[in-house]
Length: 154
Image 1: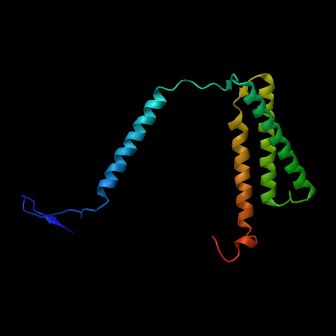
Image 2: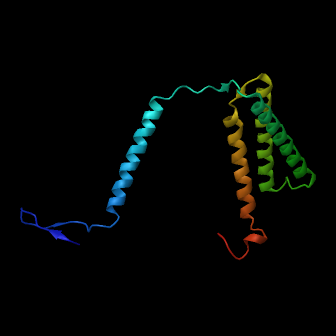
Image 3: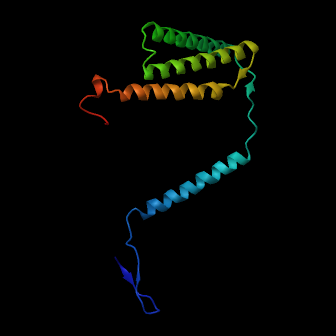
């Protein structure tokens, strides 16, 4: 470690300079800039509305049809899980719960489309749906099927 002279008589230890010091300083400056920009955006943001007036009729119809198709797909998934009796397994049960919440989410979006509004219920039903989907996939991945033998995490 490099030592430098102290006029008071004792020597002070200093840390060695690293080649990454300018990069670290630049990172700190960028982080401060991002925090400042986020603070400005939050301070000047307009209130968000939970319901929006739809714009183009073609886009609304396509959005409506996509929710309808997705809802029927999730109902078919639930039916398939029950028919093949895999709903009793923990991972598939979680995926079944996710499909149920996706059905509710799509039904809410369809009801909002029929009412002429795009209702912002996505977080209320989408978050549990994605949570159960993640838990189900994680549970199935942890069972160690044929693709997991001989490699991967333990």
